[in-house]
Length: 450
Ligand code: HEM
Image (cartoon, rainbow, N blue to C red; front, side, top):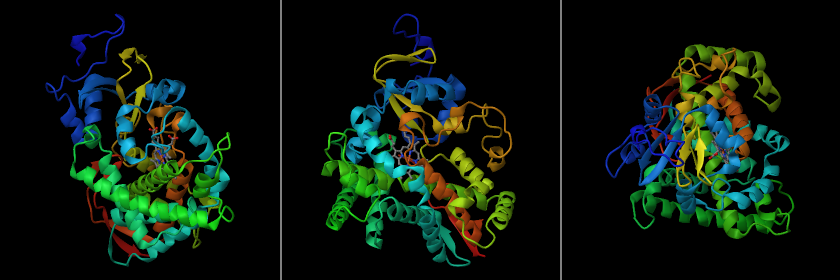
């Protein structure tokens, strides 16, 4: 599609401008390569609303924070997750909160929300710190740690010990992490667009990992059911015992889909954010000194607690800045429920919208020196910007249900780790590999214990 075609749907509003792409393929190859800078390039060339074809579908990418807010918040009932995202959801967990639509989503979000109240999240603080301290105790002084290895273990342990109140053994942890890896590959744009019957190595790996995960989950559910209804007050018990308003409960398949969803969404994204934050701090002596001073003043020799969080301002700013530079969920998908308009352009009902989190977080109109790691921008008055120039957790009714949990875990884990270790980068660059999330290869740091 191009501006010069001047296509109109109602004689008044044109389709958005965009690249013509290759005949038949459109922008498929650029999309599949998943280049993060591709979004910025599209925006710079065509503007804040860009149309292109890929995988035989029409896409419209949105880079204007006000239009992002319109889609997620003000006009959220006019947009659903849509066909492109449900192609992955159908394979992974169609009955899980991330992929559900309409009334089924509303019913389950309401049922699960009580597991995420501020009081409930606060009660997890000490376990988060203890679990982090245990993990760090295994890192040898003078050794090299690979964050791609240690962070997913840590965040999965935190998730299972808190929200699910279970202790996974080593084998169980391996099964969940293997499934998470297979899910992120299965849900990358290229694999999502292929017909289901086409076997690919990603799909085969995913099917094997899913089968192992299903066996593990069936055992966990059976064990909890054996415990009876008393003694647990967590997300797993909510999934098994909570009643919908009509008195019914979730069926087995939906419990399985919700567990897969929370096991994946609840540890993979937080692990990536922690990885990016530690790597960024390891490369910045000034920030590191500022954090040392913060820990000395606020914590002394004690471990951080929930009560310390408001005073850990620089730690909080580091988390915000890491999530800006490397948002683990780097774009969001939506589809209009009927033909509509956005930014004055026509957007037909079968269009897949891409809300470009990464590109908006790197837009020089909103961020001074957008590529620089500057946690200080969150502490000083850094000028006005639209609210949705920053949306690492999405927005509106479908914003991340685990946001408070994740932000608390990230701050407590960072403080616990940095109190105990100094780091030097072994990996000078990040090998970013955008799939379902902004995955990254090996990220090695040299550890000096303090
Ligand atoms: C740094 C960590 C995290 C990031 C960056 C993140 C990001 C996001 C984003 C952007 C969305 C919205 C997706 C959309 O609108 O299409 C989302 C939804 C979701 N997140 Fe997170 N998330 C994180 C941690 C967590 C945690 C810890 C949990 C669970 C314990 C979780 C569970 C979910 C679920 C279930 C949804 C779907 C919510 C719904 O549609 O109602 N996330 N997350």
